[in-house]
Image (tube, rainbow, N blue to C red; front, side):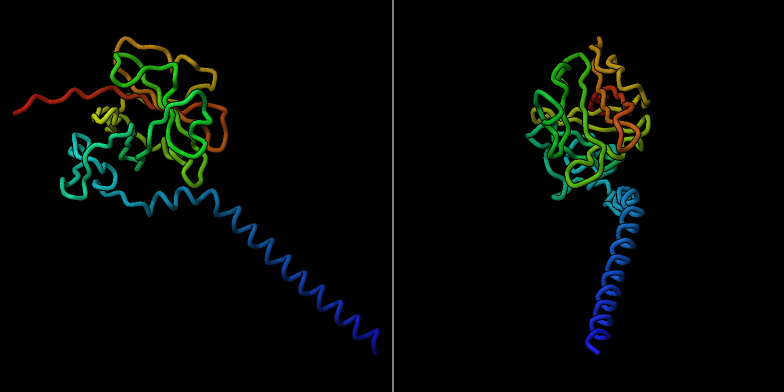
Length: 212
């Protein structure tokens, strides 16, 4: 009788273990299946209103049709980049290497110009998905003709996207000096790898004369 009890008890524990293992395997499978879709899901449910996409008063807010109200803040005093088409609103950080943005934000490449120079300003961001580090995950959705802005030393600088392309990771010429003001934004490509670089190039939009 005791032997039968121990056998039954052992079978019951084995059944519980198998059920638990099945639950873990199924849960892991669901997680692996859903994880690649999370960036797209969060992007679709994100607030894409003009006021959320261009939250600072100025030319960019006017370009995207944001209503100037108490909800639209004055230009930030910290350096930031705002790309309304992909709801990016991130600080532009300074530092010696890419570790500067391990906790999020974007990085101005230290060997490139600042936005006030007649030269090439290069802004870099991570593309892997997660809390505070998914800055340029959707950079591939940016299209030519769209507007974005840099906020530098309290001033808004409006840009228009003129080109998007994918280049080899060794294409250092994208950071080369230019004779005119240019903004170069890039991140890794494809997603989850550093094989290539996804590049967005933009030119400054000259302020329109008053009364036009």
